[in-house]
Length: 167
Image (cartoon, rainbow, N blue to C red; front, side, top):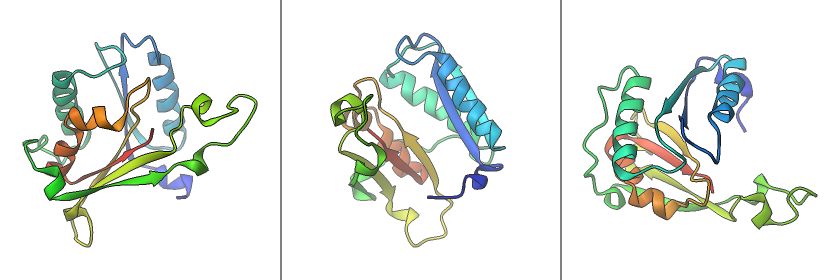
């Protein structure tokens, strides 16, 4: 695990749906405050959406947010890239991220699945590409399959973005 002091100056993007009744916007403000405490370059964006992304909302929101957040990006490249032809999607074991407790007596109660997934474009391995990392949290009953259907992998492949899908 990386030293927490490495957050100093690092860009962190936190998104909140203004109409999200499952995870209220105040929770995302708490996330921003956490990262700000460690001197990260934190951006909190709140959009007029609920808990779930619709395809157009996701595509347009991601293009605006990443392009706005990372100043050297002129926006995202076309998302028609064949993600499975230019990258790798692998399962990762998430057992170390939950423990049995009174609050979470079993995995189902914890909300953490047995495995998450990692996608990386081939261009991000063994090259000098300046790849970015996005941690995708498909909570509230969402899953990686839904995120794939929304176009996450195509956008990642076209823009050298490594995706960590924690479930």
